[in-house]
Amino acid sequence: MKIKYASPCIEQDDINAVAAVMQSGWLTQGPKTQEYEEAFAERVGAKYAVACSSGTAALHLACMAVGVHADDHVVIPPITFVATRNAVNICGTSPQYADVDVDTLLVNPVAVRGFCVRVFIPVDYAGQPCSYDDLYPCAFHMVADACHSLGATYKGKPVGSLANITCFSTHAIKSIATGEGGMCATDDGDYADYMREMRQHNRGQDSPGYNYRLTEMQAALGISQLKKLDRFLERRQEIADRYRRAFANVKGISCLHQHSNRTSANHLFVIVCDNRDRMAAALKEKDIETRVHYPCLSPDCPVACRMAQKILSIPIHCMLSNSDVDFVIEAIKEVSDEKMQ
Ligand SMILES: Cc1ncc(COP(=O)(O)O)c(C=O)c1O
Image 1 (cartoon, helix red, strand yellow):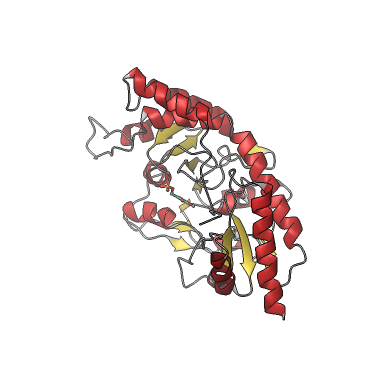
Image 2 (cartoon, rainbow, N blue to C red):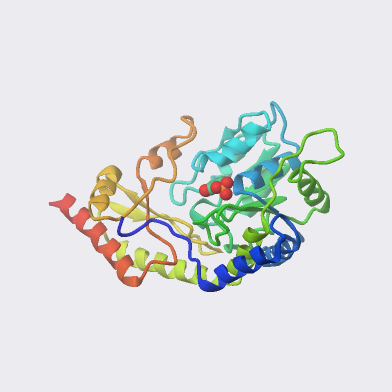
């Protein structure tokens, strides 16, 4: 594939940082992990950060911390990766779904109010923070799925400081990459202590814990990547701006709305197409990779079901040059022009 839809950005200093840890002889969770947690907590404006092996593990730890149990009332949006749902399922219950806003695909606060909710897990879809202030009163506990939004802000505050627990992913194609990796950010010391125990077998307690530890190589990579987060975010924003300008008047496609009171991490760039499958096939022919994020998880959410047929994620990542981005733009314009003839 000539143009990938996503890619990590690994540079020589990242490689050096990992190599140094490998030479140190301490490979599993240790001092580098602690250093990484401290740097991460500071970056996202939280008192504590608990590193773990994936975003999915982070969601599971957070769900356990707020006590998600069998027959519990948990609400999530229907446009998200299956990991949001799976974390709830693993705790023994099935989530209910609150529909999304048609312009942003972020969960609609009015839809959430229709439920009896104990735990709500909003998703910062594509990197744009959800409407945290409107959502906070809707549930006793808010666990944010911020796997797309490391580095984003809402009303000037960093994502990570806005929910009871915020879960991040540092999977290879996220804002920063540690290969696999996750983080739970919280201001609550009891939650942080509990999640630290549960990620490491919950030794000495009755209920079983897990091995959700990060390695020191991943932590070293995380520290190195975190230093570059602002540069990565800036580049993603430039690409997103270039797409938005280019598609402003293109018939048959539109971009998701970006709220002016928040900044996005631009993890995905999603276009809404009149004929999505035709667009995806035409771009594939031009060696441009695309994805669908995501099929709708619930048949009971009409907006999400309708939009899930139209959305297409086009390439956005820090390894793209401006000429790559222009190539994608021209290809998309060409396909939409053809359709008009
Ligand atoms: C919205 C969302 N939640 C959770 C996850 C799970 O993260 P991980 O792949 O690190 O387990 C992802 C991963 O892509 C995601 O996109």
